[in-house]
Image 1 (cartoon, helix red, strand yellow):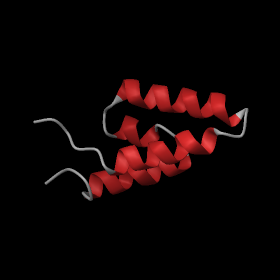
Image 2 (spheres, rainbow, N blue to C red):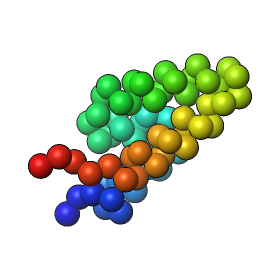
Image 3 (tube, rainbow, N blue to C red):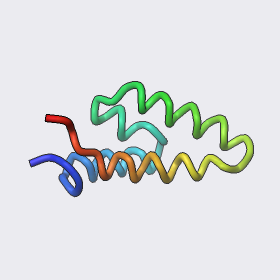
Length: 67
């Protein structure tokens, strides 16, 4: 069973906690991982990277794969 709350999503959310986009990369979503990593890096320059960082964690935790 995969989807919100699954063990895979919890691990992905923990990965994104440390590095934005890493959880998406673990889930196999390369483009979203790159996007979130780059956006977090750019916005951290302006002290707004925490917004993307939190979004990355929540996105990884609530991901539901398409069937």
